Length: 89
Image (cartoon, rainbow, N blue to C red; front, top):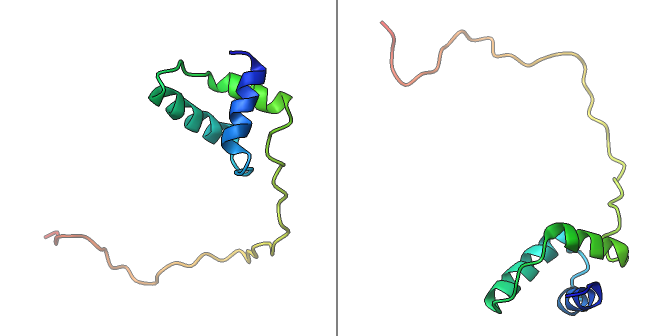
């Protein structure tokens, strides 16, 4: 199977699911090909074909958030109670 046929198979299966990355595409193609008794495709080949044909997901942009404040204090229980399932004599 050449890359053109593989790209056509990927586009046919996943054109409506653009949020799938190459690992998920590979898993679906692997299972579909197993049921049709066709040979499996290497995950590295799937990754290369998707990359070469510009089918990769857009990089996720980190949303700016509120940084966690740390005031240097650690919350510790004031109790000396030991919690266990049985009593030590």
